Length: 77
Figure 1 (cartoon, one colour):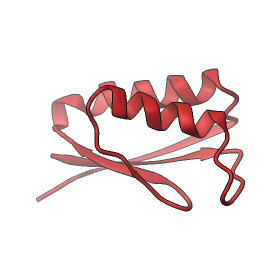
Figure 2 (cartoon, rainbow, N blue to C red):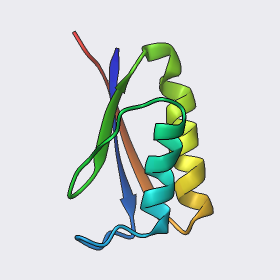
Figure 3 (spheres, rainbow, N blue to C red):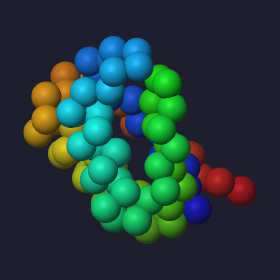
Figure 4 (cartoon, rainbow, N blue to C red):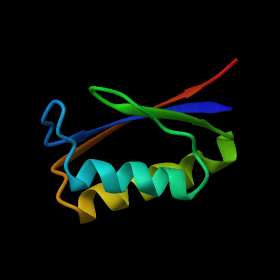
């Protein structure tokens, strides 16, 4: 398993724009249980699915007006 954390900009506290909502929806659509946080979101997926998840999140965010997407992937013990 890996944890994928992503932050999508522009960032407006308490007002996630369509670029953020679309990225979270894309992750959920491929089966990830996304924890939506105040400064970023995260989920845990099988390592083999991490690339698919990162692409879905990035594509959805950029297609909906994101100016920057930061991704962090961590292998879990």
